[in-house]
Length: 271
Image (cartoon, rainbow, N blue to C red; front, side, top):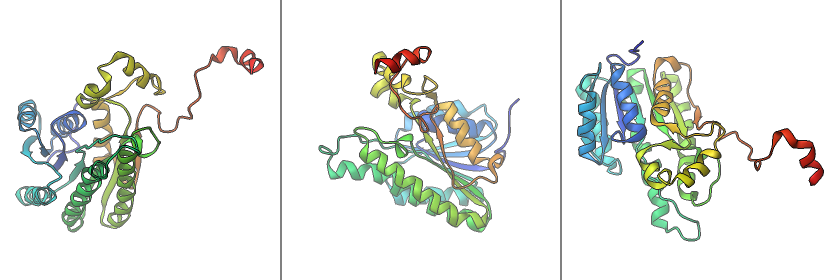
């Protein structure tokens, strides 16, 4: 049965041309939303517009890098002016600059914060200036399991996403009395074009990654989009200030080297 949780609602999704953003846009449009999405790749936005044509809602794409914070704030304000409201903002646009601490430059460090924190601050601020007087709204910021657990070569990225989490929780407390909710989705490994190009195309590396996930697989972009749309919808009307891992159980996992659970006594004697 199709759902219509977002019928007549207006949503903005950043980084909507690929991966998690694209799946989120399609689900929102399928459920009746008027979705505006910005991304850097216009051909991908054109493809997304075509894919959205026969769905219940509508889609408009804008070629924009959210690093252009003035342009991003202007897009939010113009969207609210055009439709007379803004119901949902999904800050999804990614920036992943990895590197070992001893090698990473200050510019690379700052790049993670520029998109991952600064642009989100601008987006949340602009949206709240619309949603608070409106008396309703939902913001979902996309973080990462790297904000919750340490990893090699992810110091800059993980630190930026941890900052995003804390900013989101503080903003949620400010917005709550106005019936505006702010939550965070923290994905783990997700089968997206970006991750596939970086690591998952190598079957040996893919196995290492998925074997380390309790559910023994990566998420699909659609699975993450479902969590985002749940938090954005009225189904989550009393949920705010939450960081929700969507990671197949990775965040709570206590790592223990593989062992044969059927032979615990003999293994203990061998130690």
